[in-house]
Length: 199
Image 1 (cartoon, rainbow, N blue to C red):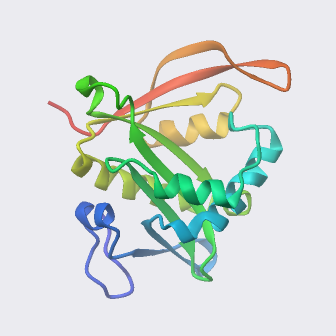
Image 2 (cartoon, rainbow, N blue to C red; image 1 turned 90 degrees about the vertical axis):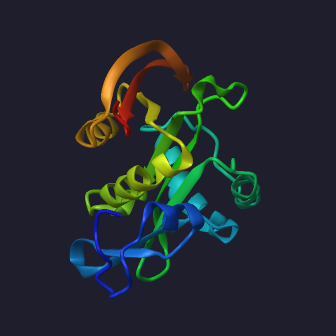
Image 3 (cartoon, rainbow, N blue to C red; image 1 turned 135 degrees about the horizontal axis):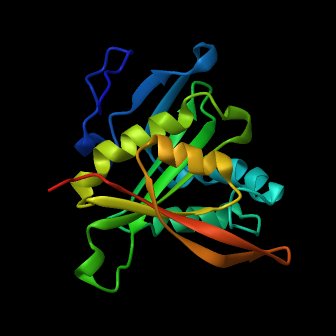
């Protein structure tokens, strides 16, 4: 990790995140602490509580169906071993954000160096530094999982998402026209990537 833990614990390294500890706490707006740690199956309810209100807005994501806690728990349990899945936890124990990286295509080794990233922050915790902490943790840990590049699709009408990724060094590499259809409306998806390792 590029920062030190203000709680007096030793700094977290990429290997720590990949192995699930130690946690790292950082002050958020309003004096609260946010801990970034590896996901656990017991986080399923908290993750669903973050995702379902976002899905219900019909904006920002291509997820269209509310998630069930049991399904999320199974998803976590079956998450790829080369994946990286971290959550942001507030000082009251509530999950306020999550970020995951999965292999781009596990059917071939040609893309082993590419990960697909996804980021979600609780609607009530936007603009409080949660995304910055998630990205920092992921950027530090992903090379240890063999990733050299991160890639994702962002809805073209998600200005906040596009800005968030651009601020973290992601560059637009293309647009998939009419790629999603939600509530009868076609939506373009913007493809972005960021290199973690340069040669």
